[in-house]
Amino acid sequence: MVDREDTDARMRRLRVATNAIVPPAGLPARILAAVQHRRPVLSWLDMLALYARWALVPAAVASLLLAAASWTSTQDIDHAVLVSMSVGYLP
Amino acid sequence: MTKADMPSFRRLVEETTPAMYRLAARITGSLEDAEDVLQDSYMKAWDALEEGRFDGRAQTRTWLYRIVVNGAMDVLRARKRRGRVPDDSLADAAVEGTAEGRAALRELSGWLRELPADQRTALVLKELEGLTSAEIANLMGCSEGAVEQRLVRARAALRERSERG
Image (cartoon, rainbow over all chains, first blue to last red; front, side):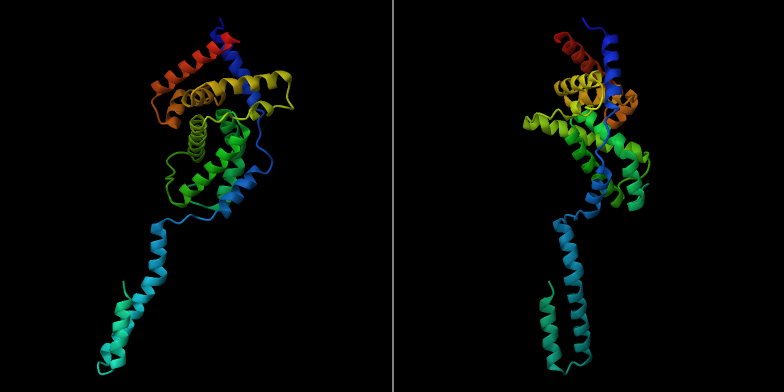
């Protein structure tokens, strides 16, 4: 029967032995490189937000500008066509 | 450190890698797995800092310690699910050491492999890392009573293992 003292002594010996474990040289540099060079994975929500920022918002602004221009010269049929087209472009 | 600041993070990685690597190796019993756990843990830490999920209430090292413990336990659970036998690289870590040291490491590897993940982790944190039961409970997200129960079971398993020879 192995008593508690034997187990404790064995664990102390194991603690000392595993204290000798050291990381491979260059591991911190590899970790930092992985963190710095990782490409973020975009979720579909991120993609939607990017699309909204770079496509929908400028289109909406352009449409509003065109609409404002057309209202200032209501006689101009070309402007009216542009307004129709730009409103149609909006989602 | 509560914000993603690369110079500070670099210092944190350089200062904590030896202790965190040893911790992960002790829990997983594999140097290869320890390296993977460490890389994944620091990535998670950086993400948390970038996204403002670390509020600084705990010390940075304690917080990092918890991430590594959880990562190492995930490896143990995945290993069990897939039935993967870990390499015995922990036993080879003291190649330059004494015969007694090498034998002790082999012994540890064998014992660790036979214990369930929660018992193995609690035992390593208590006996090899020198933490208190309260600290272990905090790290493993359970009560002190649960920690004590895991330690009793792990020690009983060790005694049984010793009797078997």
